[in-house]
Image (tube, rainbow, N blue to C red):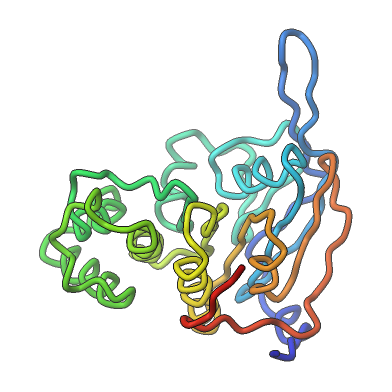
Length: 251
C-alpha cells in the first residue's frame, strides 16, 4: 500500500475547476437533470476516479470536462480558462492540444496501423512529417508495441488496443488525460496492465481523471469522487492506495 500526500497536490496549480455545474437534457418536452450544481477542483498531477451507478451523471461530467458537451449552467475552467463562450472550433482545438482521451471502446480506426492511429492527433495539430512519426514511434515504444507498429489495429487484442489508445492520448502532451471505463472491455490481467500504465503516467506527473463503476479500478487512483443522482455524494482521498502490478490478476 502507498501513502498519499494530499497537501503536495493541493499546493499545485488547478487544472480543472467547476462551480455549480449543471446539465439538463430535454426528452419529449420533459427535463432530465443529469448534473446538479457540481463543484470540484482538480490540481495538476492528481489521479482522480469518478464513481457512480448507471445514470448517476459520471459520464456526463466526464463529457463536459473533456469539452465534448457544454454545460447547461455553472462555470467550468480548464487550465485557468473559462470555456463558456468558446466556439465549437475553439473547443476542438482545446481538446486536441490540452486533452487526451482513453475510451472503453478504444475508438481506433481498425484498418489503420498502430502508428497511423497514434499519429492522428498530430495530423490535426498540423505537425509535419517526419516529426509526427518520431513522436508517435516514441509513444508506441513507451506502451511496448514497437514490434506491432505496422499492424492494423483490428488484428490486436483488447489489451493491445487500449495500449494504442493510451499512446494516442499522450502524443500531443496533454494537460489532462480522461479515461472512460478504460478496463471495461478487458479481461482481468489486461485490465491490470492498463491500470499500471495509468499509475506510471501519474507518477511521471500526468493529471488523470478516470470514470469507473468498479471499486477495485477506482482504488488505483489517489482520490475517489462518488456521484449519485447528479450530485457529488462524497469526495475522499485514498489513505493507502493499491499499487497495481502487471502480474496482478484482478477479480
